[in-house]
Image (cartoon, rainbow, N blue to C red; front, side, top):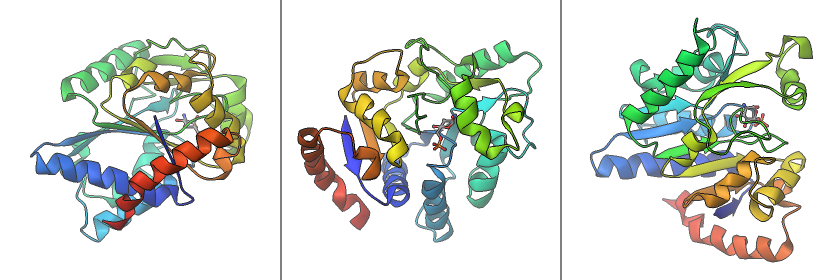
Length: 263
Ligand code: GLP
């Protein structure tokens, strides 16, 4: 696991994504990305849009799979993740609409929708880079604490804690859906590489537990310790609780990657 401490998460993550797409292009291969929502990745999306507008990057050969979607919100609902993705990203880049995949939260048969989504990921091939955020309780996608670490795409009840945290996007907590579709923890673990974006002191405990805690379903994101290729991109505040020794060690890892932004 590598940690990049930067106060420009958006640019760093976007540059990493750009380099991934470019290296796939060199191999004449398309890129399959897993994508998150939430407030943290917004700056990465803005940077990627800029790169695309300035013709530094094209999404023509990129296929995307989003992590999750609220059950009961249609794609037109302003708080659906489908709306978020189009509004904040897809409408501003040159991606082919048929290459965009987001779980359908208003599917007639939600269980079947989950099975179909998982098999769409399988048939597309391995996800090259899964980008994610993290909840304050360690949830990954909508894999809440105590989720099976071997889970696949399925419907999940949301905890009161998650609904409270996400109530800021709705008029009140009662409007926050009680259920969601989420890719499973194992779905994410099967990706070639995972990049997690974290910002702010309110996530410092999560970062500490993710890097220095035990692997446990109590803290679902901790499973990433078992993944061969993970990068945590975090700002200073999010790293405040990480032990000093570890912090320094990881600092040197950051240097290894600092040239990424100079390309
Ligand atoms: C939601 C999403 C997660 C996201 C989390 C953190 O619960 N389902 O995928 O990681 O929010 O969001 P934020 O970046 O706004 O803190």
